[in-house]
Length: 121
Image (cartoon, rainbow, N blue to C red; front, side):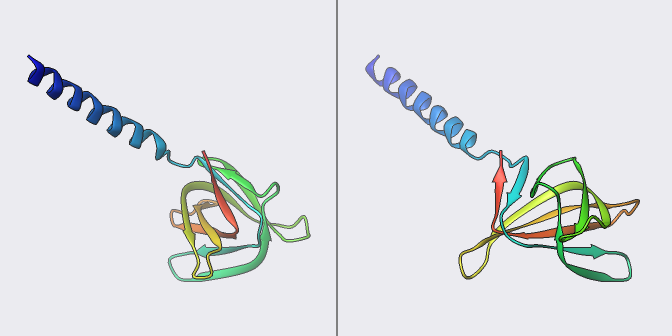
């Protein structure tokens, strides 16, 4: 009887630990950044980096639509439909992210590269 209770308790503790570990690993729903941003426009023929761009608010969310503008202007360069988020750290320890999405009617993903970028859950 005591052995069965110990086994059941260990099983319940294991299940609880697994559930609590999984709940801490939330998938980010968005991103915000405090640093500079650049935009890599990808087509079937070329990859063009446009430096010094901006998105109003410095914040995006998955499945949202955003206007990528030239920094310090109102000139819209592209309209981006956000599909994926990629977060990383550079060798100097600073964070960055790539915000992947479709531009206009393209079927090829392009990305916004933002520095000092953090996840929004």
